[in-house]
Length: 85
Image (cartoon, rainbow, N blue to C red):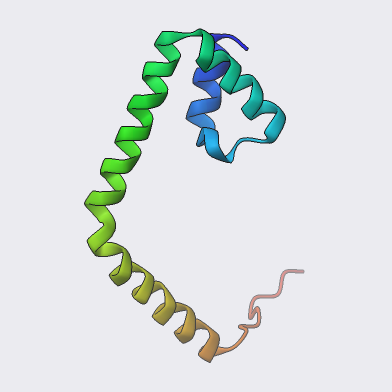
């Protein structure tokens, strides 16, 4: 794996969520490349800061989402009222 592949992988999602074979290649690259290792650490710190910043709202957002799901379920399945011919 090279630096460009690492950047693409890190933009696509968390390294922790990578498939095991890809994760192994990422870990090898991080062990060899200080620039990508620093970038990975920066991403980790940014992720932690964002999670902390929004932690207080997480419960509210989850509650709202559950309430909306309940309202949609109570309505029942909607049937299409438009016929195309």
